Image (cartoon, rainbow, N blue to C red; front, top):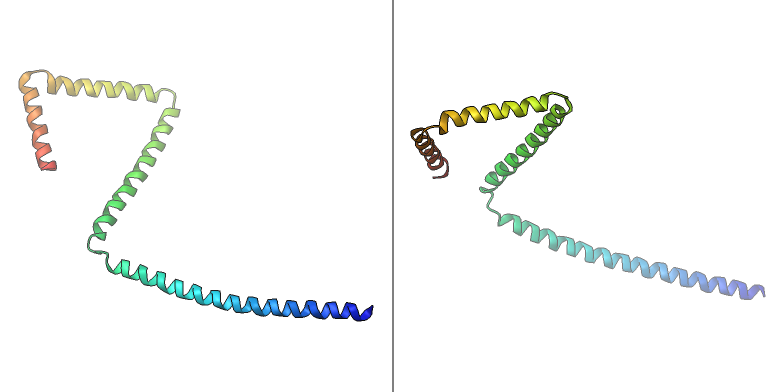
Amino acid sequence: MMTETTEVKTEAQEVAAETTADSGVDLQAKAGEFKERYAEVLGKVNSTLDGVDWNQMGRIGKAAGILIAVIVAQILIKGVLDTINLLPVVPGLLELLGLVVVGSWSWSNLRTSTKREELVQSITKLRQEYLG
């Protein structure tokens, strides 16, 4: 009985050694395949980056910077407005102030036809100046 147990152990050890040797070969093969694939991907990335017109990246960077600045400004404005809305009387007073300013502007710029024509001309001039 003792001999059978030793033989089984010996066979199990041989199988384990073969499996370990096979997995080592498999790992080396997989590592080689990974290195080849990695080199191929890096080559493609480098060729793509070589084809990029880096002069236009300045414009894209400026546009991204402006977009980020606008987002930050909107977050800050929202924080200020939320704080103002927490005060009991201020929101109503600000609405009243807005109505007074709009009424005053309308009275001075829309009252007569000549004022309206001047306003349309100034808007057209600004539009031409900024939009071309």
